[in-house]
Image 1: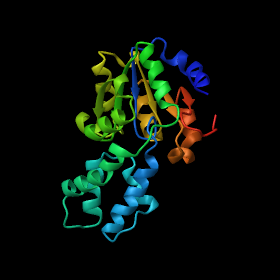
Image 2: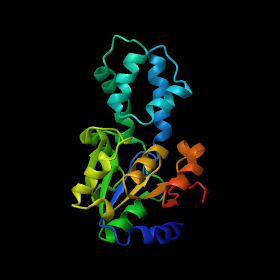
Image 3: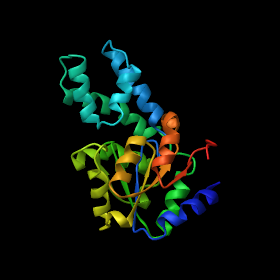
Image 4: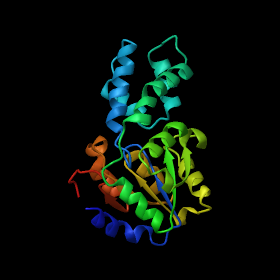
Length: 226
């Protein structure tokens, strides 16, 4: 229930000025789509998306992953071309199909009504992020968007979270980060942020380790994990 979620996170947000939300896998139910997209795109190149490949690109920005693919598969396509083709494939889904997790809208509305600045910190691109949030009627709660591309580095580094906080003129101590991916939880926590982990099936094998890394945990979809 949403009331249970809100009561659980209240101690972690009450003294915070800024709430930094990841998008894919945290508020948006999209990680399964990215796995399928990897498979479909590599199949179009005559290649296979092995578990090792999927694990390698998990921490990369779209452009980093595209450069990795160009080098790994020795293709005539440049990383820039590959990135654009992947973005073109995903664009329609973000603009028309991918839903929020079940309780994300209520969750974001609550944060907004508490007077928190909500900043999206994402490895996705700004136009697709904005399109998905607008279609799902939650962009109204968002004060700003910071992408890994805009920050200049992937979420293996804390830049995207630090710059997200700067949107709200908030220090690290004044921010709380909500993330689903283990590597991103680790990055934010090591940088000094309060971190609340959000369960996603794409990270189920890492969940026990995520629990150990984060300050608290919530489930925003219909999974019964906590």
